[in-house]
Each structure stands twice: as structure tokens, then as C-alpha cells.
Image (tube, rainbow, N blue to C red; front, side, top):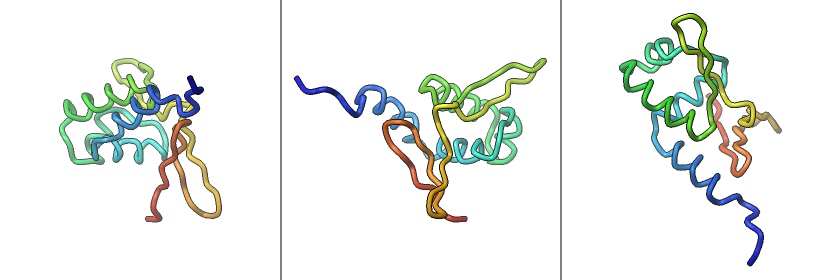
Amino acid sequence: MSKDRLQSDLCAEKLKALGEPIRLRIIDLLRDGERTVSVIADQLEEEVVNISHHLGILYHASLVTKRKEGRFVIYNLHPDVSAVSKSGKQHLDFGCCRLEVPDK
């Protein structure tokens, strides 16, 4: 049997988590730094409960990290998800795949 160079199970889990537009928007926001659930909800004009649900999915797929600061939970991109800039193009590198970020 051949080696699974793509780490197919892990990659499929990450791609599945990214398969919802709101989650991609959350990831894009977190490229600029950490945020609380309420700040993300305000910036995306979504309900806090909806954002919290999607952050849970991103967290379980190891795409974001969280830490508690008092009564607030602060989310950030997982250290393994790197924002890379090459030739003026921004990318999000998920290890198994890469997402090119369009110019603003």
C-alpha cells in the first residue's frame, strides 16, 4: 500500500471545516490577529451564538486556538496555519493544502 502523502483524513477534516462561507470569513478575520467571539460577531454582523458554533468547528479541526482571559474566550489562528506572502500574494497554509487569499 502506498504512503498517504496528503494525510487524507486530516486534510479532509480541515477542508470540511472550511466548507462553510462564514468559517472562511472567520479565518480571514483572524489573519489580522486574535479576537473574541463578540468582536467577530460584530465585525461579521452575525449572532454571537452562530459565530461560537462555527468557532467550535474550526477549533476541533485545529484551525484556530482559544484561550480564556477572565470571562472572555480569545480566538487566534492555530500556529500550524500560517499566513504566507510570496510574490505579493497572500496564502493560508493548512499543511495539507493552501488557500490563496485574493487582493482586497
